[in-house]
Length: 430
Length: 192
Image (cartoon, rainbow over all chains, first blue to last red; front, side, top):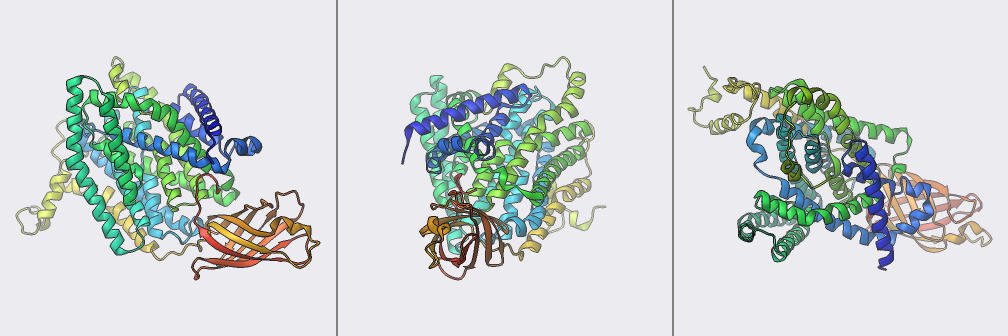
């Protein structure tokens, strides 16, 4: 039964803890979003559930989680729309060649290592409700994903966006993100349509038709909205409402097609016109609600599903360490190798590797989809969440050590890199 | 002289030509050094094959090799359980187990966690060996009895069924149990 006071209390507690832990992490030179990810886990069975089971059961009784989940899913739909909105083909302009090559390698190499890891993990952590191929493709995707929004935030904060390193990395991350989500859509499709050949064909046909309609018809409509925006000089509530309706409709269609609502929201963002003032106006309207209010709820919900107690015993900790090792080797190793072959110095190449290794909340989104569709178990989910936390947490200090403190003072002494407009250009996450 | 397969004039090499054209848009050594942009196409192909093609082939190989791998039987999800107490009514350990119960199984490979949603609120840790489930733990209802759960899953039936017994350390006889699978887990925070 719906319990409004409890829901309000839950949201208030989540928001307070997320902001507090985020503040602590900012003091540790970490992005706020990393702190919010950790806050979610602290509120879950891993800490609050262990330290104060009474309070945990009072605050998050199982029957109340459906409402919390609904809020977090709406937040994710808006968030994925914003991520798609921030992706711009112009990222590829300046360093297109290096970025494409590095990006290809940084997807394929960790993907390959991920499938190799799946060979070992499948008999140990999966069950026969998923096939090896589905499992391996999912693990491969999880290994090759990069957190574009977190990366953009780190580059902006570190004033690296205008450097060669920043330009290559942001372009690589953009390509990686799009590729990663396409692969995940295929995996979800494979799992959800495992009923038969005909249903698979129907779904693929539906997806193709949906993309065609989005690209040809909806895109034109969006450009008209953008023209209206330019004429008025402001984003009217009617225009915003139409865009939100389209986001929700697109999410609904992809959910009904069986490739998850988030793909619809993401694609909608990708096809949006990219005029900076239009993107900025739209982001400004949606960002605060999505990121400040709803995203912490997703992190909390993610934390409620993450039970570190499931990773008990030496064997499980060994699997966790192995997953973290393979994740870092694949993404860091692959990106570094490709950037080095592309002619960058070892220091720059390894910095790209460190940055591309940031998985952040995009990994959490992906893992939650994996858990929802049953391709990974709760225990494997927890192990992968730990991997996402480690790879995200390590980015700032390792980047500081490898690159920022050594290269920036020498190479860009007078160039206090970004202007305020640069800082404002990536505002999805703090 | 270029090898025959790289000669754009040779019929049937359209794909190769397009591939080389595509690769020529990608920067390799010298990307940041003006003057080194004229790169040997063979080198481009070699590097791309080495860093993208080979891992891609390896990945396909792994998928092919692993296609026949077997994972443990799936038992995770929600099961409707009916527990029939033994004839000995004096055995209080089974009082909390009477009648219908809901059992939520969380599975990670062969490792299982069993959570009973009845008056016992028992939480058991178990293991799957083939189709045999064995689990044990304590009840959360205040009884000091330790509980042992043994059941065999019948994956051939629709919906899947299990039957077995529940053994209490304080009871001389075991209780019989029958289960029917209801759904795979709703993982919204509740089935860890």
